[in-house]
Image 1 (tube, rainbow, N blue to C red):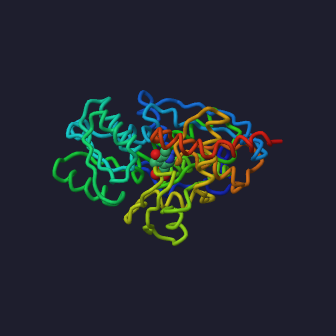
Image 2: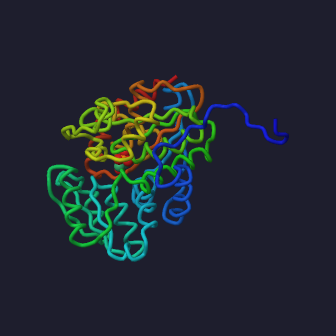
Image 3: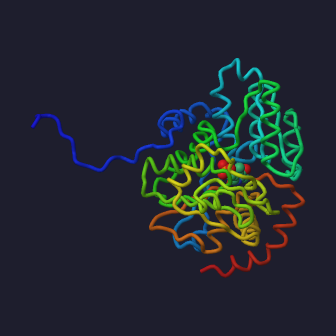
Length: 353
Ligand SMILES: *Cc1c(COP(=O)(O)O)cnc(C)c1O
């Protein structure tokens, strides 16, 4: 036996099959440094009523307080800041249900490059107006996300602009993963993290970071009942397209892309549970955030809370963190939704143990 050399017989560490260009944790820490001057470290706020409902302390990660009204600025900043300057100078282009487009437009505005955003016709007016105000060129057309994507790649071929994908991109995933680093710094005793899920960039980045740090942390992805593409893709074992349905969680609409390269694999490997919530529960969750926290959240951002309200998440022994992902909802629509569910939610709050 070699003195001074000891190799404990221990299981291999969780390896990293879905490399983000480099080992995932390194990519996420690198992203954190690149985006530090463009994103806010958002608060992690304790929620007494949700803690009562869950039976363990519940904390809200308020990404709705980012400057563009959603976490998407993290991924956009991560992807744009790593572009070589000659590429950046040709401008950036993207396709989006709104929040990613807004984040790309905002970043482009801040670093002084041109931005083009392709959106589908149904996109929330509050989001498209905000994109226009940031000086980006808005290209509206098509039924859904897939058509906006096709248009984006056509225009990129013509103009040489760099495509900044909304979720299936290593730098975007790494950028969203920085949320996980903040959660652990702010409250290391969490053992369950609940995350809104559409294309999977958000839950993918968070799951990669947390599972590589502690495989015991449970990751739950939540989508709406109608049009949950990732949920049905995981169930089918391959990316599938599902028809879009009207939903309060409009930011979760859209497919995961037929040639998905990263997020489908990450979700399959690292996300423990996928959950669907009803429209009614999403409305209740928006009303609860307003009534109990005076917080405005859009439907997509409230799905984690909806899952807790519906009793669909079985907490572990320790604390739960729920990502509240954005606040960009048309004001009149928001008031109607909250108004219609407020009495019910106040009644429920008054009866808490
Ligand atoms: C984009 C978005 C999501 C989902 O993020 P994915 O990376 O597509 O899974 C959730 N909430 C809000 C507010 C969003 O804008």
